[in-house]
Image (cartoon, rainbow, N blue to C red; front, side, top):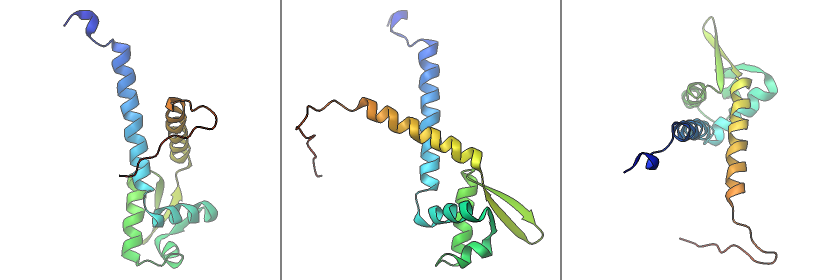
Length: 129
């Protein structure tokens, strides 16, 4: 293998950054991959903050289940936990959500730009596995 066959430092850096953005997006999609977590995000978007008990009152789930979902969202940094006495109040991490939106938008833009052009009237064949 000659020196010209090796990837450039810039190419490696771009690949690492691309992988990091894939990992970031995957983490976000995983955290949002359950309807209860999306419901929690929607609830907090309307109410600004809530303790676990308030969230439980709006979902048909046990308190322990809601706590587990809150933990997943917190680990993904989509929520901020503010301990107040015996309760924790949860807020949306708007900065992380904005980052998630940018990451997702970039992903879909890149995916759509890679889609082959289809002449008018033709359809892309769909295979069923």
